[in-house]
Length: 252
Ligand code: ADP
Ligand code: MG
Image 1: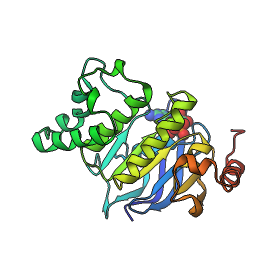
Image 2: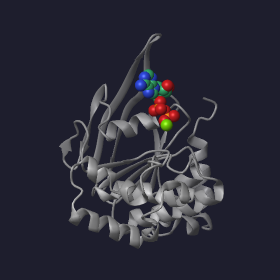
Image 3: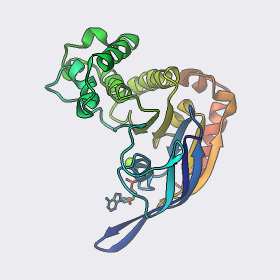
Image 4: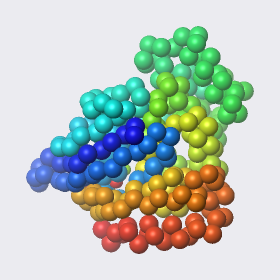
């Protein structure tokens, strides 16, 4: 397994006292798997992702990444934030190379890899544009390429499509899903959209209302080899949707 969470617990200190954000989260992820995490707002989804990313430490419990206890930021992990966070004044080319630049690895070899990604995913001719000249979906693909550029094995995606309108969202989700599968990455997607989780992932992890505990993990083996769009047409799509819906405590 590539990610292993063991009894992860997170408490935040606030002026009113301690806030329990996560309680005893234990599950593991195999290399190449696509996992979604769903649960009501405020249940600790973002917290869990930032703990896996090494941006925050758990209050107790452990996260193992690729066989070692995770402490701090790990180059094996790429984090794709909610908004695309491309810099308006930088060209697309300079934006997608930003991660490499920060890591001091922006050399000819790595730039060549970035160029290949831009070509493969239909963005090469926009290299000299600035983000404002691109559609929301294209910007989201750029954000993914910037994340892939540094060569992470695990991608963390925190509600990456929430700024997009519904139609764009469906098509970008399809693009991003196929890019992640083609590149053979492991992915953890946080979303509050059950249909997005069913359409993109191999397994769906359902968290309870705060403090987030693990309610269940839904595997959907019949859908694994299908694209998000094909899944939405599949006879079992609604069944998995309902199964997850019943587990989510929306009264919270
Ligand atoms: P989600 O992403 O599922 O909506 P979060 O992980 O953002 O939930 O937050 C979980 C809970 O922890 C929320 O109640 C939130 O207010 C609280 N929380 C998150 N970050 C902090 C922080 N830095 N300090 C205090 N409380 C926090
Ligand atoms: Mg969140």
